[in-house]
Length: 234
Ligand code: SAH
Ligand code: DHB
Ligand code: MG
Image (cartoon, rainbow, N blue to C red; front, side, top):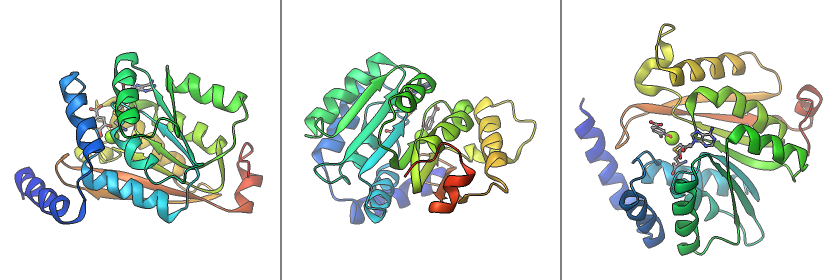
């Protein structure tokens, strides 16, 4: 089975099920013109994030890794008028492109884009004691995923959802000797999930226009999780 076929099936799915959205299409073309790497989630994956946020009734969303704001727009489109999305990006040039894309989508009132190393921004959010998040999407430097996950736990309310992108990495996830620091990060992340109390998780392998990869879906327990994960707040 070829990557070409995965792409063709993705095109078919998007054609029939993902309604055209000029703001999302413009975000991709503006990102490409500005020289950003083409590593945003696929349209079908973007819609999955959007649907998860709606299913969960998310009012507060945290995103780690903005790039040009493509996944940001998908997620922010799921928020109610008074909902809020905080997104974290290291690269100031990418952030500028993202800001324009989010503005063009009419979502700037709902999106708080913070520039800097996500580790620092996450610590700042904790120090600010921001209202806890309902849903977090982790999609930045892969080697740091376990750290971002721990930080996200502390910023999440009981019952929150955490989605982590790029966890399978072409199968490198199962290679203990992988020289890909990202794959090692995803192995550490899975080890941290294994047998952990207070949450329930699964990982789904994916193929499509973005190749062979996968995502992890984590659901934090309700009240019981709070006792076990110190910083968890309602
Ligand atoms: N979520 C985006 C894609 C993100 S790509 C989408 O699907 O549309 C990963 C992003 O993480 C890149 O923009 C990269 O600059 C950013 N990144 C890398 N290291 C980071 C760090 N330490 N802190 C914050 N962002 C980082
Ligand atoms: C990369 C990052 C991503 O978030 C992704 O979905 C694919 C690739 C990367 O850094 O190469
Ligand atoms: Mg990704």
